[in-house]
Image (tube, rainbow, N blue to C red; front, side):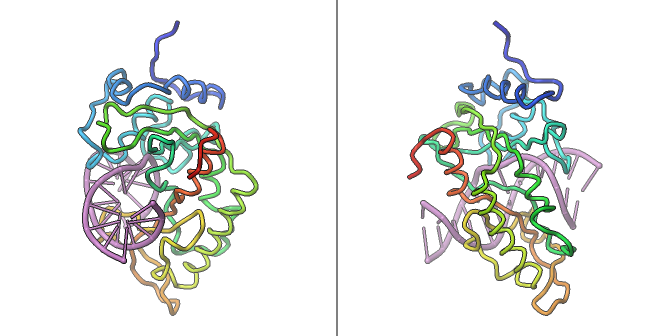
Length: 231
DNA sequence: CACTGATCATCA
DNA sequence: TGATGATCAGTG
């Protein structure tokens, strides 16, 4: 019997990473935080990334702020995803910031988002606000690589959205564009602006945008793996 | 219910 | 400012 302890060093293989993630399944966030010596906030209002940080700690991810995958050596990105009692996502999933300028030569193949989604370790966590944060439990992890169909969907949406961005229509994009991928603000607040291309090709200032996976996509992805109902 | 736009903390 | 980690909260 081995004690449950956080990985202090990066996992060396995907199998090691997955095994460690599997060991966490069933534990509450309160238990994992206590064992890791991490203070537990009352709720996530002022600590929206707290669960992600906690899981990074337990899984030996290079914690913090690197513009790379969480497990660069393994080519794996870590994503926690809040789910309801039936395993359905409660929120869209942020993937990465969308490039609004300098997109010459950018294709789906060499895009940042494709690289991010090449391999993702999904860790579902109970997310209903009726459950106190400390009592929410970690679910079974899923090491995921997009299927051909999933990648096709992502590419279609990405190309549609990027076309609009490049053509100066970024401010006309709504969250309904795209079947599985959406573009929404991703900023500190509404006063944080970034450069983009205007309707007449001129530079404009607009809210930074991010790519988010819609719930229908992540729901199906989790369902495919866990064989849960998708409705 | 999904969509919308806004927001929070931390780091370089 | 923009990258990392995301969720909040109001409206159709």
